[in-house]
Image 1: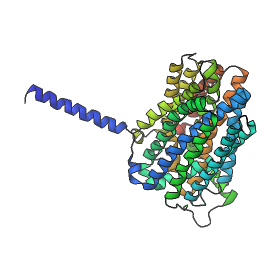
Image 2: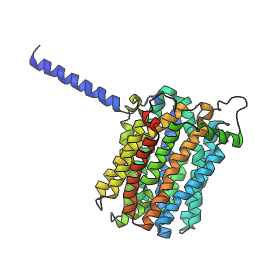
Image 3: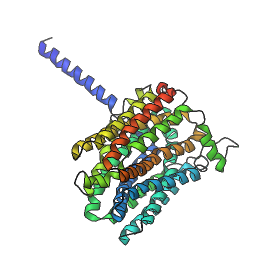
Length: 432
């Protein structure tokens, strides 16, 4: 064999190895191929979540325009948290007791009603702030039924073996829509106004409503004599008692989001620090999703990680570091966006592993209620973060609020890892 032939064979071999490595990193789309109903839900969520990003940005901008107060913008998080708590407590008695398809349909109808109220308020011109707060609380309340219902359905739709891949695909949605949606929302709001942004959100809920109508019914798997009503809610919270690993995954996310999520400050930072308008606000909202989407798309390796608890600790620490660096860059917008993207990449890895630990360690008869508690933590944390960052910024400066929050996030996850060694030691497949 000549040297040219050997060189050609070597190049082919290297190309083959590189292709195999890239395939190992790429997100696994097998859940979409194997389950029609998962495919429908995933597609509906992709559209509706994209629309929600317009409302997310619009509410922050609208309250800032109406009040000019960082604290008032932060209150958006407080009322959202109140809605989440009410939805979790009220929905907890329903999630594992009724057909999950029916619950999903009902949640979409509720979303559309709340989004319609925001649209009407924007058409008024200067609506009372309480109307925005009430609609935000209602959206959060219905999300406490929608999110846990979909989460509880996923293991039965794709099976335990494909669950990490399905959760990673869900992260592609969260972060893909969070990347594109806010950036477009900022442009739409600046050029066409708030009513158009709210109208886009309202229309896109039809996609998930259609998907929910088309999937097969999914009655819950309940044992005879299973708890109902408030007893069912108490049973869900009681399951966490003594399960330190599960508890610590919730605490880890609370630490990351309360101290390290400065989104309530984005409308203020856009003008005061980066000298821009609503378009810059949209870019700041989108930046964490850039890194998170890259992390989700390159998540093929997550199924091979055994030290899942340790991965959560490191991911949360890196998130805090990225946020602190974002706050310290001054008026360098693109560098700031880069640090936000870095933080987002760390956050998506934490989210995949925390969700996997939860879903594989909870029986189906409790999965809806535990998913509800999980959603309360995951989506309630950023809302408390809105309040925390707004109050600290009002007392000091937005920069101090952001940097101190990132540093406290690192310190908090370090303390949690020291106090709960079971989290650091947790391996995939163990009882959490």
